[in-house]
Length: 238
Image 1 (cartoon, rainbow, N blue to C red):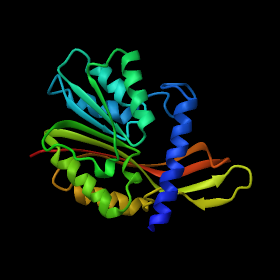
Image 2: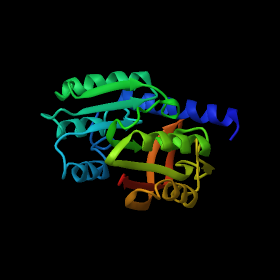
Image 3: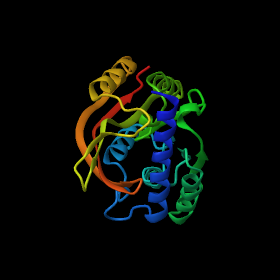
């Protein structure tokens, strides 16, 4: 990937999400923020089978689609849920949403790039990375983030990852198909093999791939964002 391609993809993704968060409320019906990711809550429940509280890191949290429901589930416990997003406006909106939903005491919000975020060692029980890792600049950068995520996780902790692969954009007017403009557009098989290799010393809980299509407006064009969506979860066993 050239620097120019990365910067164009980063600008396009940032512009899309900035506009989306401005025009849509958290949990608004008919949007992809209507509810938390079911697998996120499923893995949280698995974690809570053997503990009452959790230290949680939500990478690429946006305005709180997963952060807020996780915090609500942990209400009344000495838990902490830290949400991290590249966009300063998203991080600020997460704080507002935490107050609106009464979980401000549990939720922390930071604006930072996942690729360069220094995850504290042995600090978290649950790390969520939903549609975050494909916004790194290279395969090497992705692997470095995974290394930091693993070092930051306590024994028994869980990682919940979703990742768009084989991304393409289909113009809804002309039918033109383009390779998706996203920072890291890995082939599904390559991405899954990378995750399997990286978590070979963990207990892999979920490995799933489904086709996904989301209607978006990018650069004034109405498109279908199509991908093979990987869902991957693993638990640290030692």
